[in-house]
Image (tube, rainbow, N blue to C red; front, side):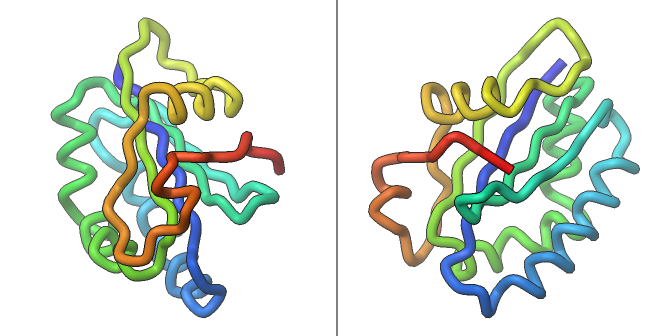
Amino acid sequence: MIISVTRLRLRSLRFLLPFIVYSFRSMRQVKRSPGNIAADAMRDQHGGFWTRSVWRDVESMRAFMTSGAHRQAMPKLLDWCDEAALVHWEQDTAALPQWDEAHRRLVTQGRRSKVRYPSPAHERLDVPVPRR
């Protein structure tokens, strides 16, 4: 199984409503995507938006990433976010990782995504532990 974890932080509240619209559309898309085993999302108390998903294989995950609502949202995130990071890894089980494990993997094995207005924390990949 392939695990995907992302974290985004909006640089301004003015982007919140369109972000939520794209988030709901993308979450609906992921749950209907061939090869998706499980997916969920949360907003943490630090203003970070997290996703975690389990995929049958890399090809299924990439097909999702490059299509539909997710593909439409990606270019917008360059301007909307001041922090963005992701990590992928393989595991034997189809269970979603716990949020503390998702965080650990993100900060130890993850990478920053490109944003046009990076925060200092983005530059350092300084991601606080997700707390609801």
